[in-house]
Image (cartoon, rainbow, N blue to C red; front, side, top):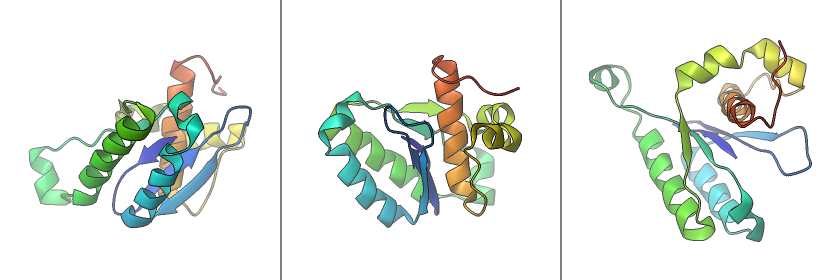
Length: 139
């Protein structure tokens, strides 16, 4: 599971043996309900959780404080640890956006227009799997 936390939360889920992730975009409340269900599943202990790192800087207060992003990250950390004994893997958005372009998502068959936050979660998933050697990114 990969998550782009925020006021509109994008997330995707790739199950073992599948090649195309399910991709979604929800309000924080809807996402937290779904995450609660997912982490209670018995197979959640075998999961990988990738979350976009949200770093607070001086510019954050000027642009957008995004309290939802912080709340979702906290909820994910709790649910993952409580139900599945997982620790989230955090990734920088800038690194991921450069590495996993729209063209690469299209070549993988993962491109999903109309759900930009869901697409960002797909980028995080692809980058994490590529770094683990479990996915070859198209050139």
